[in-house]
Image 1 (cartoon, rainbow, N blue to C red):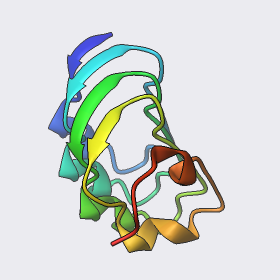
Image 2: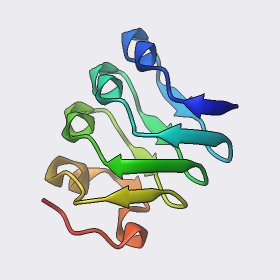
Image 3: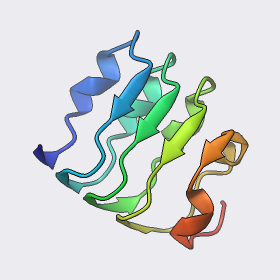
Image 4: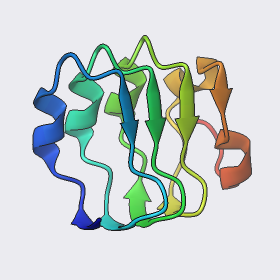
Length: 97
């Protein structure tokens, strides 16, 4: 899979797993992914994603596993993501905001 992550994925309200790791994805994480209230697992590691991690991901109250390493993110990690049970956020080298 290559290109940008389609923002339309945010409309998949019953989605629990979104695993797009080890692809050739580019661009930013669409803020619309923060609308998938049922999302439990989000893995985007080992792509070519960049920009800031959208604060809207902090709306994912059911999120249990978050993997973002192997990308080129800037800025800070939204503080609401600090409570995700299983994540690799510490490996990003970014502060929490």
